[in-house]
Length: 247
Image (cartoon, rainbow, N blue to C red):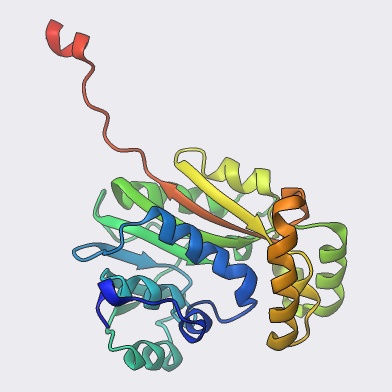
């Protein structure tokens, strides 16, 4: 499948997103609106890849992807990519350590549900360091694409405490906290997600997610439980005419 023929079918969206597709596909819709149709010649990095869904999406758009996780991505990710004829480079990366890439060497960096796993300690918070490293390795005009869980409303917080075992080790960010982390970028973002978190299987989440998509535009952003962001590193500014004239 060439990048110019990419069709975001329901099956492909499931392979890219994996969970609560109706809401989290908001990220793909945002990125499709901001990115060029073809990414041939682009070099991208996926952090915390898991099944490698974002490497799949961007690879199908033509980008040469580095698919990374805290351990080398699993056979599941490799099998998924092989189904679509892709062979990204796989590597192990610690998101809390400096990224092993030269400054301005990547066109894009992407991740889904990573920041919440980098919990703030009593005296340290690894999240600003990661964002600074991403900004360093991106070229001017390059993109950071991310989708993250938000705190949401009180109901979401109660449900997570009761039913999501791993949520006790997760730091759910408020929208303002997330946007503050990304202050060095030019931002476009969307929030969504209200009822689908109640679904106990993907069929239920799909039905509830369809309702969410109708409700989301009319509800406050801080009621939503996910945020999709397209963050562009500012391009190099040209010299001002008056500076050029006086030099």
